Length: 213
Image (cartoon, rainbow, N blue to C red; front, side, top):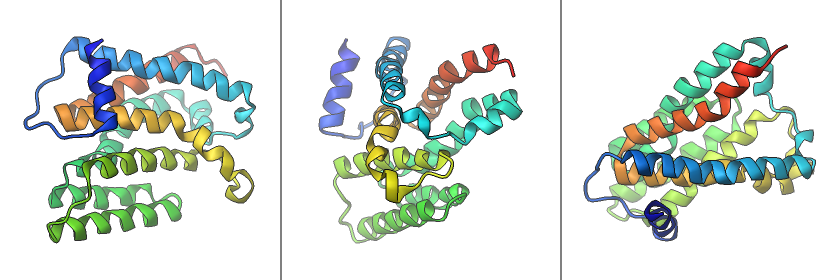
């Protein structure tokens, strides 16, 4: 379980590798196992707590065209979301600019792009002034924003009435975001995109295959 301790150390004290190395088959699927080990029981816990009262808008697309839903979830989402939420973790100005520009694709609701763009501008100013924020802060904020973005999937979610549910509803995405940050900073963006796609595939493909209207 060397990969477990490596991930644990990264979450406590995130650092970028001096050079990227391909991730081994064992580590790749070891991380996938650690993610699923948290996600499945936690999902059942949310259902037991009654969190399924919040209707996920993505289910409308799933019911309308499950194959399109599968392609979007397994291929398109990782290709778009990883550069937005993980590319800038290296704190290079070019990476921050790309994350900022691509974040405009998330403009289905106004408030999230405004928060994200404001944060990207903060990073640009800090890096330009040779005073970048700590790597730990950048990783944690990225994971939190990745989780918060998924709140927009819920239909008619009333923040004023249900704000206290938000940490429970996005905990899975924050956990996945931390794992993806580890892969991005230790092995590179391509591996983060690939892992994101495989993780989504594990969850989506069985649902697509077995779903009957």
